[in-house]
Each structure stands twice: as structure tokens, then as C-alpha cells.
Amino acid sequence: MKILMAGSFKYAFYDEACAHALEKLGNDVVRFSWQKYYGTGLLSKMQQRWLIGPGIVRLNQDLVRAVSHSFPDVVFITRGVPIWPSSLSRIKKHTRALLVSNNNDDPFGGERGKCLWSHFVKAIPLYDLHFVFRAANVPEYLQCGAKRAEVLMPYYVPKLHYPIALDQQEITQYSCEVAFVGHAKRDSRLTYLEPLARSGVDLRLYGWYWDRLSNEYPWLEGRYFPPVWDLDYTRAIRATKVALVFFTEKNRDTYTCRTFEIPAIGTCMVSERTEDMQRLFREDIEAVYFSSPDELVEKVRWLLSDDDARNMLREKAQERLNNLGASVDDRMSEALLAIQACMTR
Image 1 (spheres, helix red, strand yellow):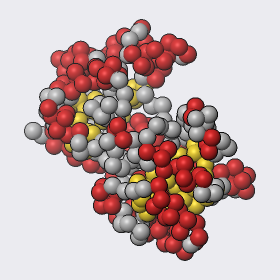
Image 2: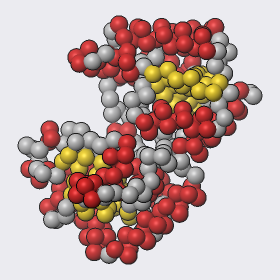
Image 3: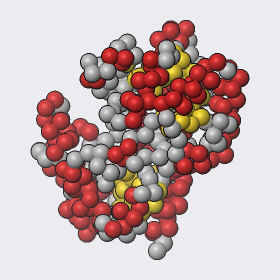
């Protein structure tokens, strides 16, 4: 099968990981990256936020041209917020390609402004198949005119997320008792993290925007670090004794990529408690959960004082991960089955 995959290709764990997995599964994948069309500096911020400008025009024109030249069986678009409905209509008019959307964000959850999602929501009826991140999105997509919408859960990437061996310099750089690798938000994560920090735990936070909150939350001082990506992300999680998982409330998340990445890396996972998390990993056997700040502090203290418990949890989580089939290859296999079913309808 020939697949044109269109996306930003900004992060190795997203578009490129999916494209590589599809190739491993025997498909011919043509890549169309749109990151370069945004430009740099203020122009880039404007075009990415408001989805207007000369780069957005060229992006849509070149996507239609790329599809026309490559004659794919499938056009697979990841998080297609800059794609105009008119571009999809032109593709459908001049080719027989199946239009597939894969979106790990929540267009209906209120996390971002309506402007960002304006093109995408209008284009929902034009796709033949939507892969969505959470079950709550399925009826919402269908209500907006989607022909078909299915949940495609997140994954880990085996070549990025594994029990990496750390040298002494990396141990010195990343080692800590508890870490959260993710950006700052004014939500429950602050309520949970403050008592944990004040309990005396060696806590590190890697990600965007923590510095913006440091004046308002003095306990953050000395605990936040720049974002880490790819193998540095893996090193930061591997070097901590306990890795935390929080969910973006406005996105209505009940699991996340870290749900699978942390066990794959081989670190003890401590997460906000949700029904989906408890279904995926057994509580206090494969993962540890919390529903209040006091419970988080209590669970972390227990794990830091009990090496055997931590080792058991991470080993059992890795066993469970293997049984779940949660790698990017597994997810793309699921996607192909759904795509083939659409083609035969």
C-alpha cells in the first residue's frame, strides 16, 4: 500500500515513528512535512496560532500537488489543524485516495482556542476515517459529520523508549528521586506537586513554562529544568526512582503517552488514578496511583524507602506492557486493519 503521511514531523516519536512503523509493515510511505511552511520568529508564531499567512497558503497548495504527483492509496494526516477543507475536497475530487486523520489532541475539550481548530472541525466530514485519542471524542466526531471514528491509543517507540544504560555523566546530570517530564499547567498538578516538594523529596520538573510560575510558587525554585526530547527524555526518566504522570484536565485525558513510555524505559510509574489507568496496569502491582496530595506523598515515601517494591513494580509493568501490545508498530498494525476495512466497504 502507498501512503502519503502529512504532518509537522517535528518530533521523532510522532509522525516519523508512525511513518517508520508503517514502512516496517510493508508499506511505501511518502513523507510530507509542513513545519518548514510556518517560517521563523513572529511569523511562525502567528501562522501556527491563527492559521493564516503565506506559509499556510503554500502548505495547502503543495499538499494537494504532492498527492497528485504521488498517487497514494491513503493520505494519512496527523493533527491536521492547518489543512483547509477545500484542500481535502480537491484531493477527493482528483484522486481515489482514502483520507485518514490521526489526532492525539482534543478539538472539543477547551484546551485551546477555537481558531486553532476551525479548519479541522469543518473538515471532519471530508475524512473517510478518524483516529482519535480518547473515547469521549468518538461521538463528538460523529456528531460533526465524521463517517467513521475509532480510538487509536498512544504508544511507546522501542528505539527511543527502553532501559537505556547511563554513563556517570548522565547519572550526575539526571539522577533524582522523583521526576515529572512535562510542561507546567495551572491545574491539579500544582496542587499535587507542592506538598511533594515541601516533603523534602528530591523532585525535578522538565518542561516548558515552569519558570513562568516560579515567582508565584517559590517551592519551584531549583526544581525545574528545560524540556528534554528523544533519548534525553529517556535518560531523564531512566535516572529517576519514580516517574510521575499527570493528565491535562481540559483535554479530558485518562491516559497519556507516558502511560506506556515510562514502563518501557523501566522506571516505576506513579500516576493520577483513573479507571483507564487501573484497567491498563494493576494498582500497586504494575503501577501506583493517587487521588489526593496526601496519598501522593504517602505513596512516594513508601516507594523511595522500598527498593524491592520499586523493582517489582517496574518489572511487572514491563511484563504487562509486552502483553498489551502498545508499541508504535502495534498501533500502526491496528490502524492498517481499520484502513483496510474502510477500503473494502
